[in-house]
Image (cartoon, rainbow, N blue to C red):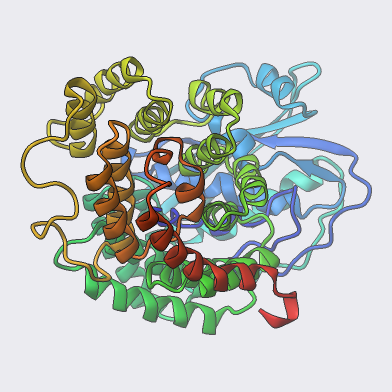
Length: 505
């Protein structure tokens, strides 16, 4: 199970949740009389291409600020970011989103100055209702979001709500944080390394900012998950940063999410379950927390509840591809192929991780023993990844083509990563796939040997052991029951943590 993507502090609360955004803002009361509906379309970047993060950050900020205005009902970030880059009539987009007014604009940085141009457009008639330009020092990028929000509220003749936001700890640190998050979302090793360097620069300016610490910790977890010579060091740094984040912001959701991610990859899934529940209690709109908790619940056998959290994550943030693939997997474990197809064949309006999409399709085809479909999906995947970038898919192709295991070292042999905290969860995930490849051609002994290695690597996925269709030929073997009992014992504390009353977590 890969770690979650870095949380977005400015989307931790949307108009559809009570959670406070992680950046130093108290929770506002939910309006009881919502009279106007509004959508903030993704702002356009009018500057250099490497400043796209400014437009994204301002869009997030306006959505959160306007969500706190009494008399407004605001479309969540997940509902509008799929429209990013579309050159279409705002009136038509507003109709699709079901709102009365749309906000659109541009942001441009020129040297030490920032220009934000904003417009309000009525959806019913297409007329521009209001427009204003804000020229401010570039260091005021976040305070200008507050100013624009107040001006929009006044233009719409609604009463601003919620307490004023505390001043940011350091504008340059927050700018570095946004750059780091933008890099992290790419998820590959090199962008993650760049994100870590940016987070470290941000922390040099704001060493105790809880959201920056949380983002840094999660990026370190990702590097730890990927393995390699720096993995153990990343483990230590991730834990220290997550613990500092919680100490600095115990009431915020993202520090709890960061600590949960660290605990999960430290072989403490029960502790992770407790922290994820605390994260959601603090920030009900934190999509990444619902995503990770959903995946964990599916693994330990609470599949319907896990699927509900994954659905919430996707509703809050359709751009979370891992939540989509894991929801499809949850439906597959329950034998509901129609829902699997709906998720994998029509992956939604958000930008799609093509690599993950084709891999999810290949695995689903393997579970159904649809070898022709595996070939078809592998060909499509080859157009997305470079040579040698998907070794497990290459191995699966050899298995299904020749109905035999590939020659040479297989996953889990001594030549692979040693059993340690370095990449343990990634190792277990690869071993699961390797076991499926052996089981699909009824190679009983290699399948059992590989499952054994997965269990030794910390496998928590009891639902997979019990329900994966291709393991049907392996389950009757007495050795499988012993392995399952080991995983069941590992799962028991997680189930207890999930069932504990809120006051005992």
